[in-house]
Length: 138
Image 1 (tube, one colour):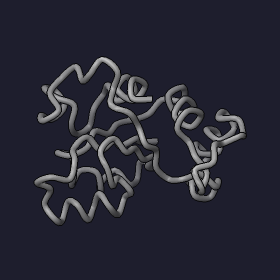
Image 2 (cartoon, rainbow, N blue to C red):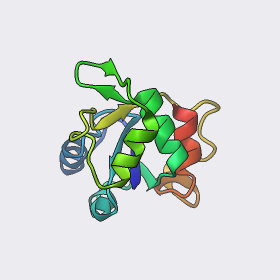
Image 3 (cartoon, helix red, strand yellow):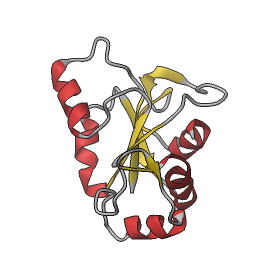
Image 4 (cartoon, rainbow, N blue to C red):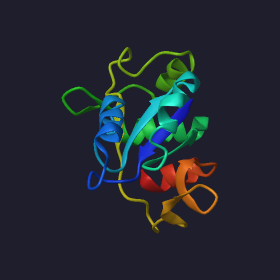
């Protein structure tokens, strides 16, 4: 499963990229979504605005427990382990009755690298350290 986090705001965004980000529900800065491995092609088109990578099971469980919401902004009362297992079985968040996006905070301690460069020098694009960044944003 892939996690994608929008790192850039709306200023100076080309209209085509804005439409793509709006369609995949990354509508504001520090919004987060979960995608299947098949949907990775969409992220390549906007890799200069987002950071994405493979999410591990523990980070997924923490994300659902701390930031998961039902429609109407109601908190989730079920076990996050159960929901994480269902997500791994190719279920979508909408089918489980959970909002398909998560709102995050800016990372505690700031970003370790540039927010304007791609992964080896910065945090944008496909990032191997996405789990560390995501945990600091919860």
